[in-house]
Length: 201
Ligand SMILES: Cc1cc2nc3c(=O)[nH]c(=O)nc-3n(C[C@H](O)[C@H](O)[C@H](O)COP(=O)(O)O)c2cc1C
Image (cartoon, rainbow, N blue to C red; front, side):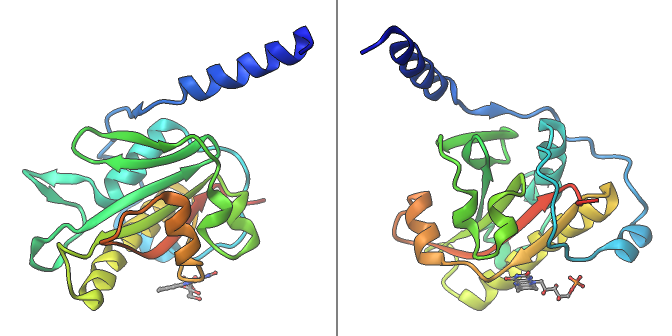
C-alpha cells in the first residue's frame, strides 16, 4: 500500500476511535420566548439548513424534550409515570442515546444514519433527527405510548418555536429498517421521529 493510502487509512481508524460519548453542557433552563409567543410560532417545517446544532442547543433541546425537572421526574408526563421512552439522536457524526440523568449522549454507532430516520428527502440532510423508542415491557399499551410520545414531541416543537429553530414530527418512517439500523433489541418499538434544524432561508 502506498504511504498516502496508509496515512488515510490510519486517519479513518483514529476518527472512528475518537468518536465517543458526548458530555453535554448543563441545560439553560431560563430564557427563551414566553409560552404564548412560542405557541403562536409553533409549526411544522420541511426545509432545513444543514448547519449543525451546538452542544449547548442539543442539551437545551433534549432537556426540554425529556429531561429531569424534579427528583426523578421529567419535563414530559407519562401514563402511570412509566417513563418508557428512550430518545435516540441521529447526527452526521453518529447515532447517540440521550442519557438524561448524566446529561450525555452515549455513542451507539459512529455512522450517519440520518437518512434512515424517515422517508422524506430533508431527513437525510437536516442536522438532527430524534427517534422516539419505547420499552414495550414498561408500557404494554401502545396507545398510551403514542400519547406519551406526543408530549415529548410537543416539548420539542415548543422549544424550537421559542428558539427560532425548525422542526417536524414524522410518522412516515420505515420503522423496521430504522430499528435494524439502530440495532434495537426485541422489546423496543419506534413510535415517531422528529427532525430539528435551523430554518432554511
Ligand atoms: C402523529 C403525527 C405524524 C406526522 N407525520 C408526519 C410525517 O410523516 N411527515 C410530515 O412531513 N409531517 C408529519 N406530521 C406533521 C403534520 O403534517 C403537521 O403537524 C400538520 O400538517 C399540521 O401542521 P403544523 O404542525 O404546522 O400545525 C405529523 C404530525 C403528527 C402529529
